[in-house]
Image (cartoon, rainbow, N blue to C red):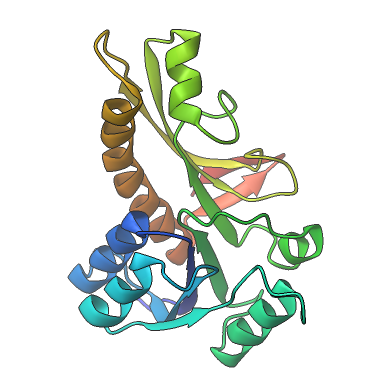
Length: 208
């Protein structure tokens, strides 16, 4: 079966554990149909850059978001174009990327930007989702992979996974258990995308 190759950009700001899960799945052959891969960080000291380079031999780029001499997204677009990643053949995976992308960029890559969030959206959007869940006293939390739109954690939901909240949980313990499931469903979502097994109908993601 012929699979049209998808060129992948993974955007990180820190350790890149979800990035590592995706790269592991590609290396094992669980996810296929990936052509070029580029890891981009807006932090020069992001540990995930070293992991991508040394453990996986993946090309990386750093685009500092605190520079004032030129816009972040013009440099981002340059790096993507320079690595043959565009709105027709590309997939952009946000993996702990701590910067908001502009509406124009999101629109250009509409339904080609994924993000993972540590809650069962639409509950507990934004920062500190695990802490929000604990303060709310919910018994079930979890994680969500969704397409990015111009809202805050509000794009079409691709996959979700529930994680129980135990009475003795704190923010750290709950976060660790949710993170393990993030890795699983992010990989599954990427695989569905590369195999063209998802479509969007009335803002709902439908598996084909």
